[in-house]
Image 1 (cartoon, rainbow, N blue to C red):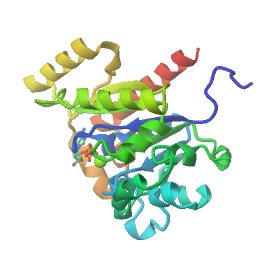
Image 2 (cartoon, rainbow, N blue to C red; image 1 turned 90 degrees about the horizontal axis):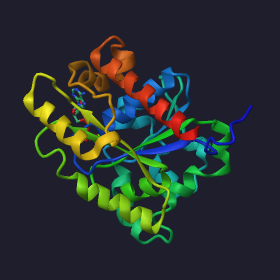
Image 3 (cartoon, protein in one colour; image 1 turned 180 degrees about the vertical axis):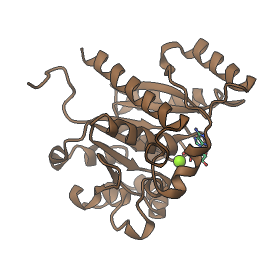
Image 4 (tube, rainbow, N blue to C red; image 1 turned 30 degrees about the horizontal axis):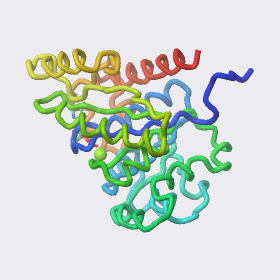
Length: 269
Ligand code: ADP
Ligand code: MG
């Protein structure tokens, strides 16, 4: 029986932080894989011209004929843009360096902030039956990231457990507020997840304490440890859950997936 409180269509989450190297792409890939292990169907949208999420989930640059560039700026049908991956239950819209010009091209487009929103809400999307769409954002608060926030129901923020981690957060929150006021009043913060956490390092403990004191329930209980298996997995074009399913990193991303699912069930109840 269908649940009338469940949002119609997939839950769309933008994974964003304007800082580079904080774990956006790593979290996009591994959260997608861990959610899929729970039996859910996931679309990973690579919105970073670097295309690291595409590579990490196993789509070679030569296999990226249609990408998020075409999804945003050309009317290529969804069926051509969405690809199956080797990870059961995970589909991807890949990206290439072409997307780096999109930010500028978007400025000359009417409805420039709504292109991803509209693309992900095409009727053909229903045929895929996705449960979640995760958008891997570029390390900037540019129009691509704004497109992700306008398209999304919520923003998930990876926060690297190191000095200055909380500094960029106010700017990110300002952008979220602007998007709420202008284009997407329902946009929520899904949560903040501490990444590359090292429990032996005082700095990690300090960042965690600061984050929990200042941001309370917004911070996921699950933290993602610094784990060499997590950093090795992309060079084997696999999520860590496939590369080394028993590793601390894989277990942490599974815990994060379950925490996310639970949070969303509670909200729907
Ligand atoms: P972003 O997408 O925010 O730029 P990435 O996800 O690409 O960041 O991560 C930056 C670097 O840190 C990558 O080399 C990645 O392999 C590494 N990394 C990310 N998370 C972890 C982790 N939990 N343990 C070890 N290395 C990590
Ligand atoms: Mg990235």
